[in-house]
Length: 122
Image 1: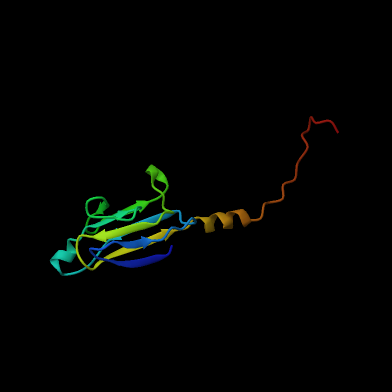
Image 2: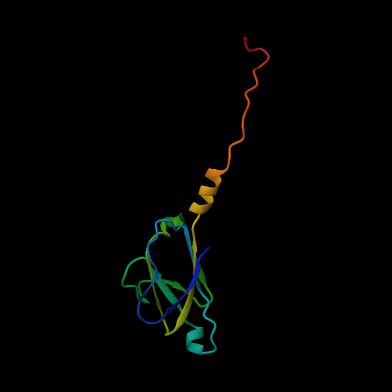
């Protein structure tokens, strides 16, 4: 599961680019700082450019969101982020289940031998 840290301030930045193979996103607001203002940073995300503190989905300090295909969310989209304070650190984990699907499809299938039923004509 690829992980990255994005530095966010009071101007919009791209959190993740669109990726059609991505099946899930976990976004954490876990900034660890002794500065009171930065320690209380709220981040706001959106899948539309122009995210602000008024129109983005708010993630409180030490909060997180999981974006998957439920509830109308689409983890493949490009996401944007902004913070209520300068220099906020956001941790992003991306999930790709396609790799698991490929492994399962490549597993060898067992040989199956058909055994005739006792009452079947020969």
